[in-house]
Amino acid sequence: MKRRIPALLFALLVTQLGALVNPAYACGCGAMVPHGQSRIGVDRETSVVRWDGRTEQIVMRFTVRGDAERAAWIMPVPGRATVQLGDGKLFDELAEETRPEHKTRYYFWPRNKDWPFSSNRRDGAGAALPGAGAPAVGVVGREQLGDFDVARLTATDPDALKNWLESNGFTLPDRLAAEVKPYVDQKWEYVAVRLAPREPGKKLRGDLDPLRIRFDSDRLVYPMRLSRMAKTPQSLGLYVLADHRMEPGSRIGGAAPKVTFAGTVTPEAGPLAELTDGKPVFLTAIDQEFPDPSRIDADHELRATAKDTTYRRTVHHDKLLTVGGEVPVWLLTVSAALVALAVWASALIRRRRRGGPGRPTAGHP
Image: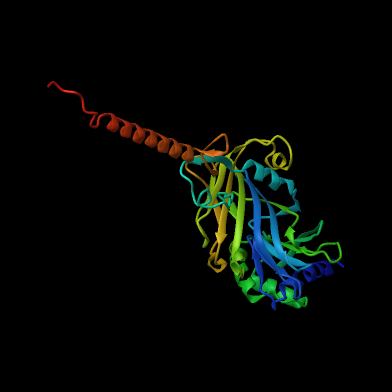
């Protein structure tokens, strides 16, 4: 029976990995592959990374589209990992903490959306060790977490992993084996996840339930290399919780990372407080786009910046300067100028008339 557990686990997992008739979509942490003829795409991956210098925790949530009822993905991790369900409210808390500041910016002269140029008004906005003598492929543990079937794996070389899967009737894509090799060389381990909603007919769409992965690490690393297999542009959002402001060491083949928030947060209750043990931490929010995922050439390694400079986005809302919320100041100004001009012109005319030729007067004989 024990021998059948790994085979059963991987039968569930690599049914998707063997479906090479469809393109393999990738998430920011690994390869996500749909089952059979179905399709799935990861529109965005948002992850919360908590690092205290010794232990790293990643809470990740995928926003997906397509018609798949089942899919699977693999995430490499640098050490022995534990996995549990995350709390979706964590992302709501962080969105609130990092919300931009809104400011109104007034302008004097009318623009193309203002009268008299146009009557149409539009609102704008700035806008994730095998010990000596360990088997080539090992199953460290397996958990059923909600709709997720999770396996924690070890592998001493990619060919052994591929051969093990093939010996159980499944095929590991050759390209995935090649991409996994750097992790095997570094003796990383793997979190393999099968997404299979227990509700019959349920599609994998929208925001999936988050997963929380924890492992020991003396450096803050976010696995990204497997995303180079993606067929469509990728979008990554990272909330980094650490002692200092953090930044990626490089672009790793994507667009320049953008910091959307940097500052200290002090959670008092809720999932954010649980993740930080209720202690103040420095939060850095980072967005990055990968227009051409094939250019991804490394994992993200984040480092502390020279200074803990704070930052919050500001969204400006331009508004025409008015009096009483109705009358444009420019109209009053122009009207007053026209009235003043008319008064001046009228006074000038009267003055000229008074100073002109007068009536003839009687002279001396």
